[in-house]
Length: 151
Ligand SMILES: [Zn+2]
Image (tube, rainbow, N blue to C red):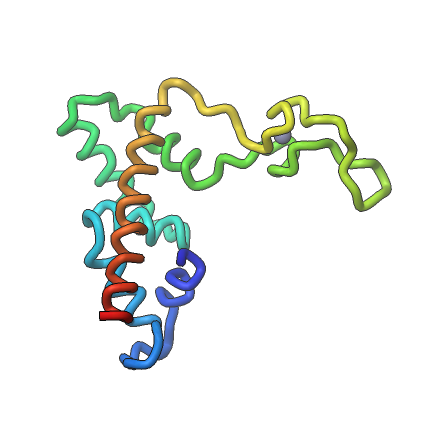
């Protein structure tokens, strides 16, 4: 879904077709699914565009403030949410064998073999909110695509 949506955001052909999903269907489904902030997060996850990042940051700060939750680390939370891969092992989870194209059985010392960075407590609530908004938009977009294609 996300890769197809990412391709749709840079589509050069937005002509509608009735016989199969197309870029227009994907763009419409995401735009009309979930919340405006959720759609922005899907767009951000699909492309990491700087202007979309700013909109997402403003949106999440506003949402947190309305919920009376701390918004101080919103930027760090979005950056974590976009990439939680362990920087030491690049998400592999295990140390490389020097000079060979294989991984060892030794877990990465930074992430203990998970391949994921530790989630700081001060951004945990923001990352959870980002996940919730994103998942709701993606789920509703899939439902809209399915309903649109198989009425
Ligand atoms: Zn690691």
